Each structure stands twice: as C-alpha cells, then as structure tokens.
Amino acid sequence: MSLALTPEETRLLAGDQGEGMALAMRIITETARLMGAARLVPVVSAHIDGALYHGDSGTLFAEHLVRLGAKLAIPTTLNVGALDLACGAKTRLPPHQHDMAYRMMRAYEAMGCAPTWTCAPYQAGHRPALGSDVAWGESNAVAFCNSVLGARTNRYGDFLDICCAMTARAPYYGLHIPENRRAVFALDCSGLSPALRNSDVFWPVIGTLFGQRAGTDIGVVIGLEGCATEDRLKAFGAAAASAGAVGLFHILGATPEAPDLATVTGGESIPVVPVNAAMLNAARAGLSTTGETAIDAVAIGSPHCSAEELLELDRLIAGRRLARPFYACTGRHAVAELEAAGRRRALEAAGVTLVADTCVVVTPILDGVKGVLMTNSGKFAHYAPGNTGYAVQYGAMAECVESAVSGRLVREERLWS
Amino acid sequence: MTFPALNPLLPGEASGPVLQLSAPLSFWGGVDPASGRIIQVRHPECGRTIGGAILCLPATIGSSSSSAVLLELIRLGIAPAALVMGTPDAILMIGCLVAREMGWASPPAFALDPAGQARLPDAARIDPRGHVSPLS
Image (cartoon, rainbow over all chains, first blue to last red):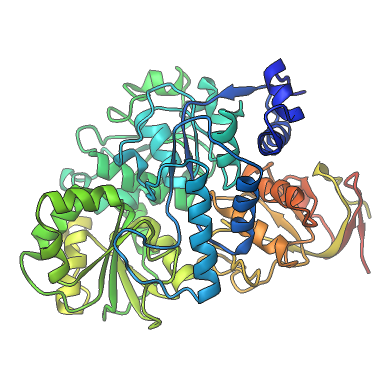
C-alpha cells in the first residue's frame, strides 16, 4: 500500500516550515510506510513519553529538535522525567547523567510541552474527547486514553510522539481505525466473589492476566459491571500494558465503547474464557518475585497516585509512624490537591516520601540496599526487579501500609480463596 | 539447506550470531541501555546480551520507551546487528529512524514469522534483500 500525502503534508516534508518540521514529517511518513498506513490522520493532542533520560541519545535528539526550531502544533503534556523538580526527592544519578536528564526535561519544555510530568495526564486535566484522534505515548497513558476516554491513539514510541505533536499528524493505522478497536476475546469474571471484584487489589491482578492473554489482541472483560472506578481502571490498564502489548481494553458496562457485548464485538462471536481462582492466583503469584517476608521499602504510585489515593493512604496510616521507607509517586497536580486538603505535612511526618515528576522505578531514588520492595502496583511489580534490583512483594495499599508499619509482610489471603 | 527469506523493513546488511528470544520482550525495563544485557528477571533469556546479534523477536510488549533504549544502544555501538520481528513493531523501528536522523549507524530490520525465525542458522549473514546464508 502506498502512502498518500496531502499537498500541505508534502510541503511540510519538503521543508517549507523549516528543517525541524521536515525531520518530524520524515519520521512520521517513514513509520506510516513501515506500518502500511495509506494516509496520515490529524491529531488534536499529544502526550510525550520521550523526555525520560535513558542515556545521552535522547537528550541529544531533543536538543537537536530545539536547535532546528521545533514548535508544537497541538496541546501536549509531558510524561515523567528522571528528576523530581516539584517535591525535591533526591535521585542518585551521577553528575553527568543528572545534568543530561535536566537538559532533556528543559528541552521538551522549551518546545512548548506543558510541564505536567506525570504518567497520569488524564488525571491532570488532559482528557481528549470520545472518538477524537490523538498521539499519546507511555503504555499506561495510551491504554487509559483509548479504553477509558475512548479517544484513539496507537502506542506511540518515544520520539514519534514529539514528531506528532509538531506536525499535528499521525500515521493512520491500528487503533485510529474504528474496526480495529473491537474485542476478539473475552475474559469472564462473573464466577469470582463480589468482594474480590470490588477490591482495589484485584484490578492489577486481572489486568496482568488480561495482558498475558491478550498480547497485541483486543479483549473485553465481562462480569465487572458496577465494580470499576477510575483508579481501578488505571491500575488495570497499567498492569495489562506491562504484561502484554495492550493499547486498548474494554470492560463491559464500564468503558465507553463496551456498553454491551454486541457493540464491543461488532456482532461477531468471540471466545469467552471463564476466569477462575486458580488462574487469578497464578497471575497474582507472578507479581511477587520472592517468598521473603521482611520488607525493606514500599513504593506505590504506578501510575501516579491520584489525590484520592494519597488521601486514602493518609487515612490508612491513621497517624502512625512508618518503620520502613515509603515512596508515594505522584504528579504535581495531585500534590497541589493534597496541599489544598491540608494533608501533605501529616503524610510526610508519618514517613512518606512524596516523589513527583518521576518515580522510583524509572530513576534511581531507592537506597542502594537490594532488598524487598512491596507495592500495590502491577506495573511496579513487573518492572522493579529489573530496573531497581529489588525483589518484589505485591499486595493491597492497606497491606503495604501495615507492612511498612511493622517491617514484616502483612497480607490478607482470605479474599483470594 | 534453504533458509526462510526475510522481508526487509529497514534494509541493510548484517551478520552475526542469531539470538532467538523465546518470549516477547520490552526493551525498556527489559534491556540495560548501558550494556545491552537482558535484565527482565521473568524473561527466559535474562542475562544474555543482545549487542552484535541478529535478534529474533517473536513479539514486543510493554513500554513505549523501548525506542529510546534501542537508540541509546545504537549510539553506544552495542545494538543488535539486525532486528528480525514477528510483526513489524513501530516502537523499535522508530529508534532506528531517529538514529538515522542523528547520523548514527543503525541496524537493519526485517519481518519474519516466529516459525521462520526458528529455522534460521545459529549464525547468519543477511543481505539487503533479506536472503540468509549461514555463517561458518
């Protein structure tokens, strides 16, 4: 299939609007050809995952764009960077890396990106309309944007995201096309206990199971009607997108493109897999990598905690003092709400380290001690062992708090039996 | 012995040992950008190094930052010699496209289904048209 460009797109590619724009168009059109797109599609917003430091290459590319005069054509938010510029949590990046990470963050701000620095931009006011085409990066943000907001984006990799923000265009393929958004398999949770389905700790586990089953396929979960909250959908999507290549999921009766089975499948008959306790327990066991019950640190907030989750943490701590380092990763938008609620000081006094603009799994913040990290995040559980060297124990937020108070693993098994 | 032909996505020549991944991998969180070592503890090939290898990926999963990790491997000269993907993956290929814009030598990319990947020799030379010959 050959790629057809509009006369305006052809002019942009030829450099009419400068070399920065031409570079962005080269990367977009080349990607479009590789993915078999017949044309480009206008996009109305972007979310940039490319501003996290992984080495000097990303900084050099961002500064190259700035030098070429890169400017953005659409509203654009930023995912996390490698430094906490809002709350001042200390990173242990060596001086050169620290400097390059900082330059990278400033380069993206210089291009005109909003300094949201969060992996939950959808809770920081960036909520594109149902059915609109956008270009988002970061796997959880993509999953939430497609699934919960019903806006349309592919999983835009680092660097393509900023090119889309500059040109207001993206290759038209994949999840931009309505027919490609239908579910081709279902997981049925209706056999599970209502108490389990209504608990926060269930959602990263079913998300992990879903991601393992899905790979790149699109599925629908049935039997969760009335159980979904926004933070649960956020946790589900992050876990699913870590375990699989999930850019879009449907929860029957909860996400906007799944009002009923006929709509979400396009009327096709699809395989339905009943979820039982054994499958769920296997997925849950896979989220922990150790049997060790001494807990050395706790981290929550992947995706970034909402203000509601921070206030829930405050309620669960209930004025006690935590005996282990406890990191709550969040965005500056939620920190502002926490401050407005008058609870930031109490949370920090209890021993919680607020980490904003970044998180403990993408940049070195945790102590060098390679011990056991407890988390309520399916995504942290997936990535922490490789990125931090810590082994992980997975549990509910309440269990994370009790474990941090006592220094030993506290976990309620009854819910899962 | 005939080997399956690869479909060139980003054409180029490559030779090296063939490293077959037996499970999908996210480069971000799965590969150390400073060394090219696989660090995802749940991955069957954890501990192997992908630099210089003809890397066969049945599928890619996970992070959209995988392009950034590949770009860094390319800049450091420790990227795979070639990418052989079960299905074309935009995220990884963007790492190659950006490298080209920055003037850094980037590996070619080919498409080949997982069954075909399994039939590649232990070490191979691939020409720009995707023809494979064994490397002795």
